[in-house]
Image (cartoon, rainbow, N blue to C red; front, side):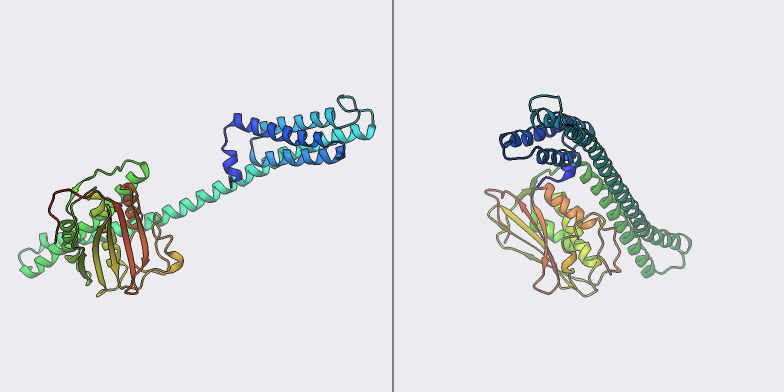
Length: 360
């Protein structure tokens, strides 16, 4: 069903056509039954028609429809019919009142609609300001933390290099590496989101070894000190497929990072993939606390963060996963895991290579 605001976005020339057409349609139908319908009732029907046009269209088409309805009511319905002359003083007063009422009603209805639109725009602007304030606060934390770690570790290495043991140097270098990776991820997420919104990110398919890609992701994720147990589950018939490797790799990396951030240490995380009838499925599954049912439809929204959660993050990771999956012609779905946690599944159309070896 078309909403009022969708109607309002109709081009002006069509608004004239629809508003005048509605008046003519009601007047024509009433004229066919003029012998059985009192002309006062016709005035009411025309008034309702103009009022509905005022709710939906701009002011000028509505005013033209209002004047037209008054002229039609006078010419075709008020005795004597087919004449502009009105001999009965009561009918003349009714015609004048109709004309005034229909004009006032049209203008007031239009003004009320304008006020409602303005109020809605102000409310949306207020929500946007609140959202961006929350984003800035989140980003300031997410960016400041790794920067502070890098600066602190670097200062220690520079100022106390001669007295720091090799073990402590290794620890500081690991902290720098992990913080730099985290910082790079946040910047990448921001850039990717801006590119997705601008429509600049296009899938560039190429032959990809999914088996190699998944093993690389497991090695990268297992190297972070989060205390999670990450395993790999790959179907035996997984062929070389044609898709955008960079997008899929980033999407799966975001899913793995999300699982590590939002589940307790020691949680089991599985990265898996299967291929069937031209479609590639990749999933990230965990046995953590899972997602509340009332929030599962919202987790892919931009900047959305779960309620009552202490986990860090900007709320961009999952929205980028969705954007990348859709850019490659597929989709991502969140479902409950058989292990009582959550399972994110990316499904993509992916032609398989012919006459190439299949990974066993």
